[in-house]
Image (tube, rainbow, N blue to C red; front, top):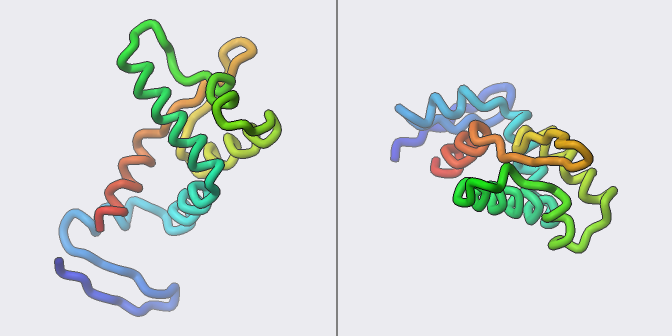
Length: 123
């Protein structure tokens, strides 16, 4: 692995040749910090993982459409205002998308952001 350190006014930028350069250029540093900050809270991380698991299960079961937040909220032992706050933070970090389905809220993982984070972690 060929790593080169460039010291610039904005700080240290880690540059890796080939594929990794495109990943770093495509991710805004502030957006990346938002993502990791959102996932640094253990309740928010658990909520995100539950959404991802429920979404995966919905792909396997064709009668299920998306992830209803109410189903997840019962598993986490958190109040509705707390769940709402954590959902807002995950949406602001672009980790999930939410939409209303009648009185229910459906959450889905933002696959594009997730792929960028996975690629960044592989550096």
